[in-house]
Length: 416
Ligand code: URA
Image 1 (cartoon, rainbow, N blue to C red):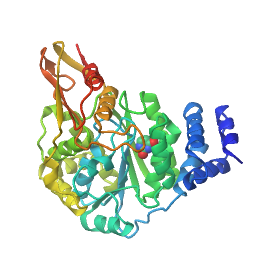
Image 2: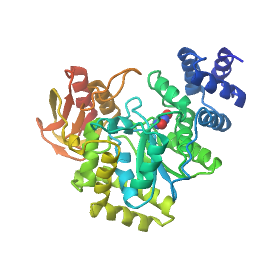
Image 3: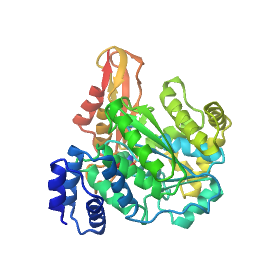
Image 4: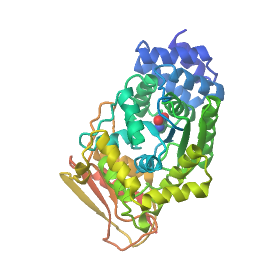
């Protein structure tokens, strides 16, 4: 067997066998298959797709590429969530402390940013001192003690995805249903949680642009999870507009904490609603309660401050400096003004995502260093009425902000 045979087959739309998929995953993980051959196969998969069986074999081979975490020493039903990726998607930072405050253990492994979408690990690493690399024992101890731990894919957890994820990010092969499904589900299964809530994003700022694609991705992932004995619920949510008002690593931490502290107004309704829905689904699966009970419980820990207190406990438990959350400063700032008067009809999430990468909040190559303080603050949101000259957005970066980035943010605002 060799890689040329595999991409010849896939290029012509033929299904790969389980052995061929195992050969590819094992060879790429151990370094015997080079990046250029792997990216060629990934592109053929991106263009020709995979059958349900191929996707399942790919997921299994990826799980078997490394260790499977044993969470049995943590008492209770362990719940996890995963987003397929969006712009301004800081939901994990908000729902995990909510669920932990409800006494449900949250044992979560998260990823770095991918393409224009941010990653929870990058956001957490923007907090001075925060440790995303935990040993298995530290991780389990933190969940037992604090009911929450969020770590990066360290050690040997799905090493195949670690390499493939980084390669896909820079080779135009992210937006593929089988590749996303296998990437997400291999990590979720290997991380050992009993239940998983999948937040499938749909729209211009998501990998799935249409409702139909999002539905297909949701069904593919749910089927894999159930075949492997997990309780899985998928929720499809809108990603035509960025979520919330902040886009960028540190900026999103600031916004997440503000939401937990109850410092939100009606312009944050999209973010608050989304977090309540996801947290409620997590609580429903984990505690076996109905939607009304779960939603009341979620709103309860937000209102009484226990979710905010749990967030602080979690940040400190993983070495983070809470005071640093309030230190978001950049060498350059630009305010963007409305050029026409009217109502903001939409803020194109794709353009905002691209602009935030341009500012340094996301990666352009595997090696790119992030500017944790860089990002965009949306001063005007969808539905707001603006006059000519009103500031609609602020851009922050430590490197000089180029015209292209400014133009992208201006173009993202459709004011009618
Ligand atoms: N999130 C992941 O973990 N993997 C993907 O491929 C896309 C989003």
